[in-house]
View: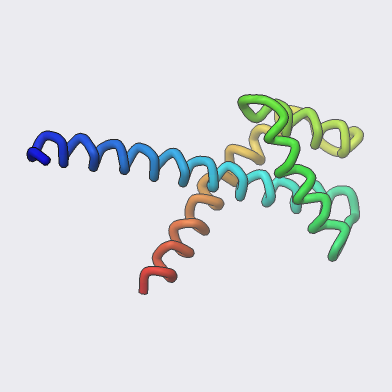
Length: 109
């Protein structure tokens, strides 16, 4: 391989890694959102865990995150509006990324 091909392969690998990490961060964010919504619904323990998983699953229905917003909005039944849910999602994404970064750092040491 030439240096150019090595460099191209490195960029492709970085792109794939970054895309995978973004996907994992969004799934983690959705799980955290599910726990937040579960708390608002008064769910605890296994029920909260099951609900958080259902929020993660809802993101696989269509591209983007509006499917998650619709699910949580419907499930909260007036306890939060769509803008509050979107704001919570925005606030939870950096938390999810930080958690993943910490996990990666801990696994490498």
